[in-house]
Structure formats: C-alpha cells, structure tokens
Amino acid sequence: MNKPLALTAVDRDFFRAVALAAFANPFSPEREALDRRIAGDDLRCSRDELIDLVVDRVTTRLDGLRRSGKGDPVLYRGEDRSLLQTAFQFDIYHRYRAPFDAFILDQQRAGDRPIKVPFAGEVLDQLERLGYSRPDCLRYLEIFYQIRRAFYFIDTALVGLSPSMHTLRLQLWNNIFTCDINLYDQRLWDRMEDFSTLLLGETGTGKGAAAAAIGRSGFIPFDDKTGCFKDSFTRTFISRNLSQYPESLLESELFGHRKGAFTGAIDNHEGVFTRCSAHGSIFLDEIGDVSIPVQIKLLQVLQERTFAPVGSHERLRFNGRVIAATNRPLDELRREGQFRDDFYYRLCSDQIIVPPLRQRVQEESSELPALVKNILQRMLGHECSAMAAEISEGLRSTLGPHYGWPGNVRELEQAVRRMLLTRRYEGDRLIVGGGGLQDALVAGVSQGSLDARELLAGYCGLLYQRLGSYEEVARRTGLDRRTVKKYVMAEAQEETEST
Image (tube, rainbow, N blue to C red; front, side):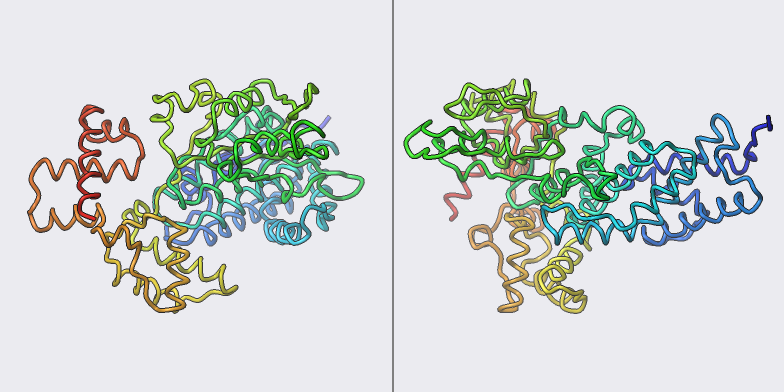
C-alpha cells in the first residue's frame, strides 16, 4: 500500500486560510482579512476584485498540485485530505458563480415552475472526482445553490455603504446559515424552521426586503432525475401584511377555513400556513398590530408546528419558517399587555434591527448617492451615474445635511421620482414645516439658543424617534426611564404646539 502524500508546510498554511474563508461570513471583516491573506494583496481594491484575486490564487495552487501528480485528495489522509477537498469545493463554487447567478435570474423569470439546471451535471461530475459519494455530491450542489442565492439576494436587495448596513447584511447571513456554516451544513440545514426571526425598524426602512432575502435563501433539495431543484425560490417566500385584514378575516387568511365555517364561507379556503412549502418561509408584517387571540394561535403554531383551519378540528402540520416584523415598540406593547411575553420569546430566535435612513446617511456621506444610483438603475433599467449625482446634489442642497428622512428609503424612492418629474423635492411638509426635531436641535446647538432642559429633551426625543424604546434611550443617555419618558412627552407636546 502506497504511503499517503502530505502537503508542504507552506501549502498547508495556505489551504487552512482557504478553509477558514470557505466557512466565514462573506460580509464579515474576518472574511475580508482572510481574502487579503490568501491573495497576498496589500492594495485597496473592491470586493469583487479581491475575490477574483483569491480565486486565481487558489486555482493556481491547485493546478500546480495537479501537474505534479499530487492533486487528488484521495492520496492524502486526515487534515490534509480535508483541506484539499475544501479547497477544491471552494474553487468549484467560485468558478460557477456566474452560471448560478444567471440561473437565479432565469428561475425568477420562470416563476413558480422549477427549471432545469444546465450546469448541474458538470458540477456533480467534478465533485465526484474528489471522491465524494453521489448523495454527498448532491448535498454540495444544494448548498452551493443556497449560498449563492443568499449572497445574491442579500447583496442586491440591501444596498448601502454605511457601517449599519454592513452589520445588517452580516446578521442576515448568520440568520440563514448561523454564525458557523460548518455547523449548519452538518447539523442544522434541515432544522431551520425551528428558528423564527423578528425584524424591527421604522416604516420604510426595508424590513420587507430583508425578510425576502431570508425567505428566498432557504435550503431546496435537488432532484437528480429531473435535473431541477424541487421547488422554485419564488414559491418559498409568502408575505402578508397583517394590518390590512379585518379581525374577522385574518384567521381565515392565516389558517384557512372550511366551507360553512362562517357566513360567506361558501367553499374551503387554504390559508398561508397551508400553502407554505416545507422549504419555505412566511413573512408576517406588522405583527405588533394583531390581537391577543391571534397571537395565541400563532404561538401554538410556533410551539407545536400544527394548526387547525377555522371551522375544522383537523390538525395540519406547518413545516416552514416564520419571519415577523413591526415598526411598533414591542417593549411598550408588552408592558401595556397588548403583546404577549410568551409569544415574543417564541418569536425572536433572532432579532434584527433594520437601520433608519437618517442613521445610514449620518454614518456614511456616500450612502445617499449610492442609494439614488441604485433606485434609478432599478427604475430605468440601466446605470445613470450622471443623473444620480445630479439628483443627489439637488436633494442635499434643498433638504440640507441634517434632514431626518422620516419615511426612510420609501420616502427616498418617491423623492427620486419627484426629482425626475419636477427637479425639486422639499421633504415631508409635516416634518420640514414644523422645523423637524433633528433640524431644530442642530440649529439650536449651532446658535447656542437651547438651555439644558431643552437640549436634553430634544436629544431624548430624537433618540426615541430613532430607537422606539424608552429603555434603550435611558440606556444610551444614562437617565432613568421615567425621566426619559417625561422629556420625550414634553418634546412631543412642544412640537405639536409649534405646528
């Protein structure tokens, strides 16, 4: 029996870095540091350029082993074999990034009908050459597809250069794969329905886009016989705004009903929990608006994974994942008895705050131009750098550097449309006309016209608008919660009187 081959110390160190990069969150500082270590590049370059350098370095190193007859992982044992297999997987995945992205767009256009994966056979053949069994090859193809979808939807749907947006993308990735993708691959890939997610943030910040990025990135099995994934990601995400349904119809929309269950129920109706696929997610927007009875029924779904349609005793199973969102302060609702504690605790396996636009603009001066450019590209179908720069400058000169963007990204989208129509946007009249809390506070500080009480009340009011929680404002300012509430209420009263 031939003696197993061994990697050189230099190769082993290189491939250890590759293995760490393969399992790192692609939106994390750790991944960027590993990429720079692999690429050996001290120059500043874009993320895409850096990834291309990394892939070239890995491919070159693997090709060198192949040419010397040492490129087959089966010839190695222990850590060396594992490192080489991971490096080859890393290489295969990155060489098929463009085909995966094209396939995602094709599937999006095809809708709910799963379509053939034209390159699946090539990927499976290359994985089999690494010594994997057919079932293992299928698993890696499935994981490759899930990873690429997650990166695609997080990266394209959540544009922004600010630190808070970098954090949001990192958190969304962890929500899909956990903070250890190796653990996810080995233990949790078929258990994620047990992890519900609560998205918090103001109206218009993009909670729906964040939810869609999670919901469209779930694990989907591959059917080796048909050459298709068993479901289309366009079907795996179901979104419902709960505030749009009257109480009498909400339970029916969620759980379905049987014919004759109530007046007007002339036929059986399937609710969203029935229609959600085993690999899917349901997004329940405005969860803070639902009544206690509905909260109790939703809690039962989360705890027991079963539900009964209205007018039926039959228990149906729900195998999907729940994502919920609200712009209301849940701590206040819980304190007032309007939101059950047990429901809250079962709902928030992970809690993610989607940052307001004013925070993003304050953190990064290029945030607004980047968003305007993206909005225009989506609106017009092509890049319009000159127009984006003109609109961004127009907004900045008209609104000033401290405009609060109360409608967040949704308001910015309409502002861009207004600029295209009239070349002018003067902001939310309710906010601008009354001076705006942030503008008034900044102006007062600049002019030195505020006394200590006015300064503290204005700052507490501004933090409360941003955070939506007296407790969080108290923590940030070091004040008692009751003192914070007094200042916030006083500031709100002054604003009302001034308008």
